Structure formats: structure tokens, C-alpha cells
Image 1 (cartoon, rainbow, N blue to C red):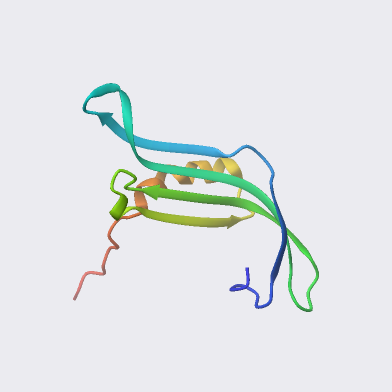
Image 2: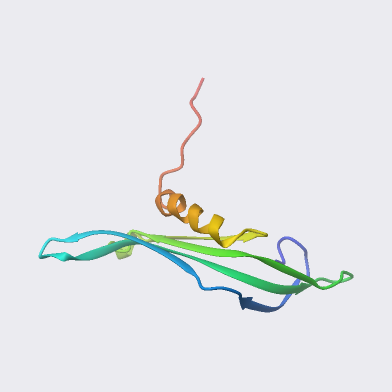
Length: 113
């Protein structure tokens, strides 16, 4: 918050609904009924109170999302978080389905001319 508004102070945060989770993996070679989790994601709806110098208190709502990939490769694990203000939980859950595959991907470069 301080990056958006210098001096901003988070007073409280509250989880307002059950989180939505998503996992991905591959079958264990020694047991087809179990899997090795390689990706995990969560979308957590929240409300928070923030104040900033010379400004009134704001109550903001949104969804905090976290994605971790390469969980089966501890030295290569990648995590990313999002704070989507004014987002709905259903929207954030749908976004998890693409974000869980975007994290850890090599950035695309512009074609040279």
C-alpha cells in the first residue's frame, strides 16, 4: 500500500469468504492413485482498512492470489502474488487457471527488426 500512497498504513484485514484452491501435478511412478503436486494456487477474498496521511480511511475489497510452481523442484520453485482490488472471487478463481501456468515461464521478447 505504501508504494501506491506514501505513508499508507494497513489497519486491519479480514478474510470475507472461503478461499478457492487449485493444484496440479503428475502421477507418482510407484503409485498411480497418488500424485506429486507440482503447482498450487489460492484465491483469498478480503476486506481491509487503510489510512494515509491527510486522507480519510478507505475500506477496500478484493482478492489476494498466490501461485507456486515447480514444487517438486525445491531449488527452482517460483512464487507470485496478486492483489486484485475490487475483484470478485469467481473472477479470481478463473484467473488462477491461467496464472498457474504463467508463473515461472520465460518472458517473451520482442522480435528484433
